Length: 76
Image 1 (cartoon, rainbow, N blue to C red):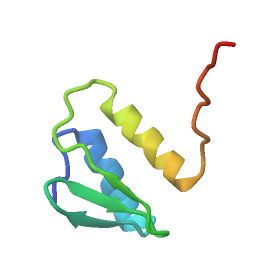
Image 2: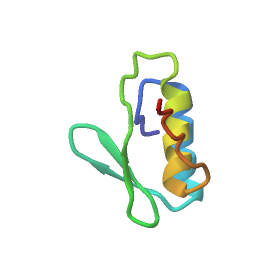
Image 3: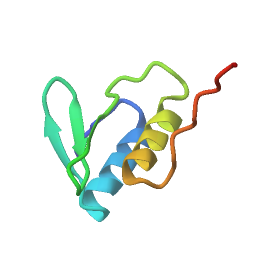
């Protein structure tokens, strides 16, 4: 079983995307997920932030076009 990250939730998510959704993994210094349409995202291999899984999952949703990025608040 291939480990992509030290975080077990990130590993499960990456494996699910690769096996069931048609994503690919390429390697450099860090594993890189490549979506079926060619967009790339780096897999956090040793996340130190407790929100890393949540942020990674949200980034993937944005790549898939399922969620729009939050607009920055501007002051006038």
